Length: 375
Image (cartoon, helix red, strand yellow):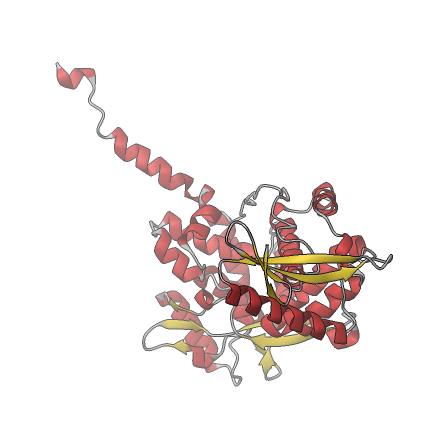
């Protein structure tokens, strides 16, 4: 190899190779890492940046010999926390504390390997966690290890060949038309159950309903604008032992949406607004009613009305199912629900479209030419 300086060499294949110290073993032996590129300039820039990043990490005592616990918590609090919403960070913190830290916590970063990670994924499967949740935990691990890889602490593609469980869509539960009518009759008798009517006729999420203000509703244009959501997250300052109520932007950009109002829903809300002296549609003592209170009232209504127990989110599924039964196309329904793709809507509600498929078969059946008609 031809040496250019600063531990950068030109290889026989024409590429440039930059060498750097990844870490020192307890014996003192140096473990090197390598960077490759077609141009000397590119390799040098990457090498300088990596060494600077390593130096910065050493200031915070994060080195390849650090325990995973030290590394991961440092990365989450100093890097990840700045990039995601508080509610997302709260979910990530719970994942880390419940799964990643207990398994990897006492392992040194440089000792991580594919076998350990695959074993971890297999253990999660044995705990009967959903395939989607396992993938979410794995994705969090992947985010952190990508940063460790960038610093040169671990080998590249450490997670590349880890086998994850296949995604399985959970069947959605929607109320039958009779069940919906029974629930509506019970909810309409109680002003405190307005959130149920809103969910059934707008498909809004519980947090979106909690954060809905009268100023978000254009009665003249008959439109509800979803602009915010309310949720509870673990309070990091209290070591996740307490929770705090947060009002923030909706789940995704596609969740910020305009929902046309039906005449019945509009009349219902106009009547409710005339009695309201609060900015929030669902209110109590001048403030919004938080999601867990909405859910408590919902569960109580189910019990009092002798209706089978379901999740509040099932009301959203019920709205979607009624729309499909009335011939709604997937693209329009996807917009109404605030999904980020029509594929998600189709995958979620494909089983709810059975009656639509039956109607298609009935239409095809009309083309049948009987033997009698031919003779």
